Amino acid sequence: MKDFFYAIQDLFVNTLFAPLDALRALELENWFAANTMSWFFMLIGMVAFVYWMLQLKKFNDNNEEDKSVSSHSYL
Image (tube, rainbow, N blue to C red; front, top):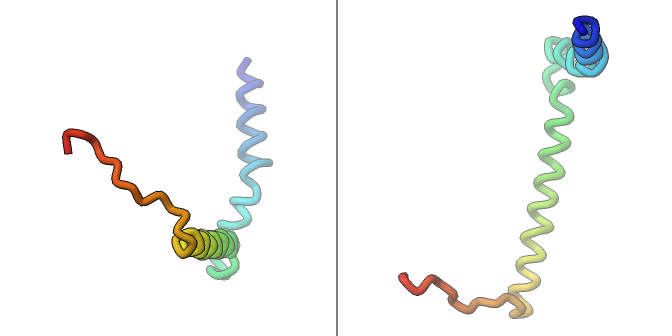
């Protein structure tokens, strides 16, 4: 049973976390290269936000948005 948990430890430490160890070593040499994935995800988020805002503007300009007030009765 003890070997089973050592196998899980070996799988994660030596195999699955190897890219993160390489990224940690790269960070000491070049910060921008180590953060390329972060920049990539931020770019995707910014593009998605702009697309979302353009879609909202399109629906707002066509008056397709339901703007009726529907609050709770106690308000």
